[in-house]
Image 1 (cartoon, each protein chain N blue to C red):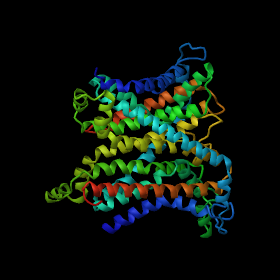
Image 2 (cartoon, chains in turn green, purple):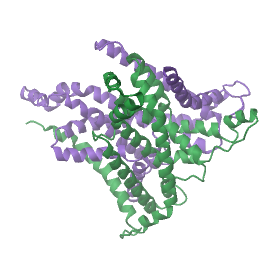
Image 3 (tube, rainbow over the protein chains, first blue to last red):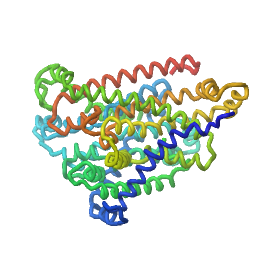
Length: 270
Length: 266
């Protein structure tokens, strides 16, 4: 008897249901029930008390995403126009810091920006400062940009590398200036890279709690910190934590749906 | 214009690398200061190697990454084979759920697993620690394996497997002789991706570990929470060197494979 190939996936399907689907449903269940298991909307409405933290998270991660896009776009473009044999090496050099542990990269900025850190020390030798840099929202944005910049470069590069050189020649033959070529040829053709880059930076930025904790001090709480505090912190309250997670997921879903509108190929990730 | 571009690229690279190089330089600093270099020493490295917690969490990280990536590669490869031969609707449903851990923020995946494990911990003899960590790692690894293996089927004739069985192969033999060689490149890249994600993961591990089983990223986190210690700099330097070596070897292998397959030098 022939064994059908689709049964091969049975072990994974069990795993997927138990460890992906059920845990996500538990977030929904915890968000909408009390300790005794009866239905309530209290936790979801309690999330409203933290509106300022939500606004700060969205705002800071939008700024970081915008900076990443502006900084990464020329980098990705230059990479994609290099000679083929140099592209691989350059791409590796750009992506290499990504392979360092995320915590160590953030820690590096902690020591750089600190009140006794090297930047303030250098400023001191030329008679300036000390400037308070650590524990500000600017430091949080900087940390996000530093950590997630390669997430923006990679998808942009992989789309741009497919744009044929003759496109630019055709555009200039038809009378486009370089600015017009950028606006009417390069940007529309790299749109899938832009949208996936934005999601790949925005999602980790809005949900981080490491960057805000290490570089933002106690005064720059983000959604991630709020969730972490409900599960592992002093404010232990898994119901509220689940409700916040649920709202976070909805925000991300909305953002991704909006991004999809701009994307002709419907491929947000990867 | 070209020159301007080069300067810009150099500035971005400087931005990416200066923090890491500062860490490396100060790992050789005699004093604990992170701004004044007072003299060369290898003391922090010595201390690092004598730090039991770091060594044991490194071993732990390796064990978990190896087991999790092997299990998820097997699970994910079989899953991809099965999913590929599903009908359109169930296939779309399964793929959407599979994408969840990739699309969702890590903290949500971590918290959701923590809720599940607490549910079992309260009712059975499940303890937060090695087992929960391993399950969590397999869970976030498998989707990457599936996503790497799935595209390989597009290049494969779907009837080959059945043909092999018609010609007398057992289902297992048909799988081993016909399907596996075709999808092997995807399996390998899926395995490597799962392995690196496991090594590097902090957020999901943070929510699913107990006090008995620490991974290296978790140890690093608790070190950064305490006082600044140049031991972290020494550790960063070693990790940076390891990463550079791995990438050089990886590029070397890729280049050789390119040349051998006659696709021209790269």
